[in-house]
Image 1 (cartoon, rainbow, N blue to C red):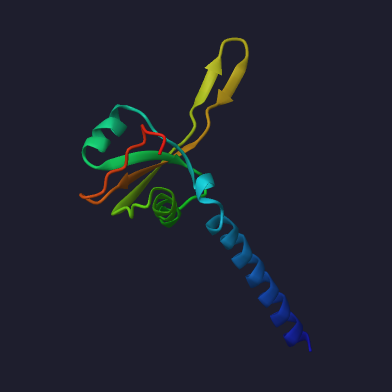
Image 2: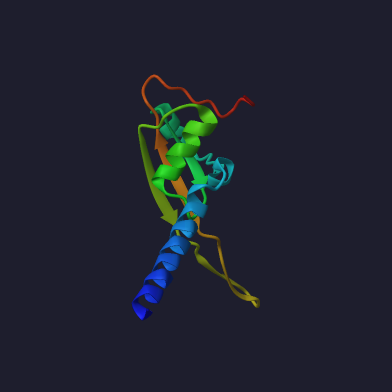
Length: 121
């Protein structure tokens, strides 16, 4: 009887882990993409048919690709992810603080696809 009980406990634990994994996957696509990044590097990327986004820290490449496809109706050809760790800053007389950690996604689009973020479409 003890063997059956431990198997039930193991099954319940596996279901709980699967449910936690699904919570990130089923998060809204608008929660995955935070904002487009506007910088010199992003402008150079846009000339080469790519675009940069700030994304949720828990998002994976697959999540980002699925969100781009759902929102903009464009299937990305490649997704690269970079994590910029928050820097520690020192303030005179006030101690230290930490900037936030940012996860960036550089999304390459197919040659025939165009994605214009400057319009409100």
